[in-house]
Image (cartoon, rainbow, N blue to C red):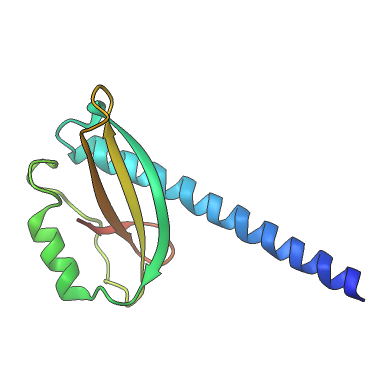
Length: 125
């Protein structure tokens, strides 16, 4: 009985790991597409995903404020467009570290907010 429970726990842990890796891969692809389209000097940076988690502490007002700001100053072109859709109550966020390819001292961090299913970027800061 104990052996069977151990196998189930290991299987669930492996499934969670694969699910997290799939989310990370999908998020990385969407962030790459987003930065390729809107980042001013996208070819000068490498991207590292540091964390993926969810939050209920970022409401519609905060999302709209982030959208108006347009991300960190000087990093993005004007006119960033986000896909249409409701702002969910729970958002998945991804913390990303960007390091300059030729100067590792030049870094900046950003947070990208996704809908809960991680099918679209809702905002970034």
